[in-house]
Length: 92
Image (cartoon, rainbow, N blue to C red):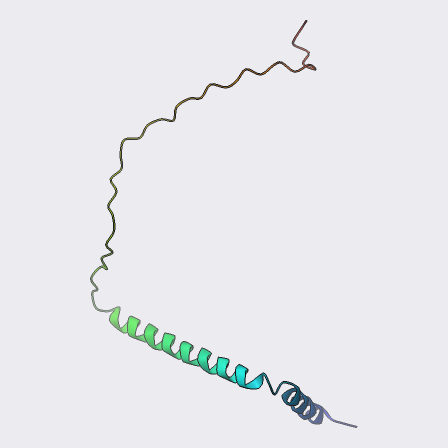
């Protein structure tokens, strides 16, 4: 009978044979992810190193809008509604 380690080796070989087409793509995407993670970690370290120094505010060019006078919305008259036929308060 097979032991646990033999079954694990057989399973790994079967997966490698069946997924041989996808392995290069998986390795490539794993490498890209590792590079991105490394670059982000480096950027965070640089940002933390610069955090001790006073920074100047970043200027974003744009349009300045001054608030105008506020006006109340105009009241719209409600149309008259006929009384309900089942309303007990109305009499004919």
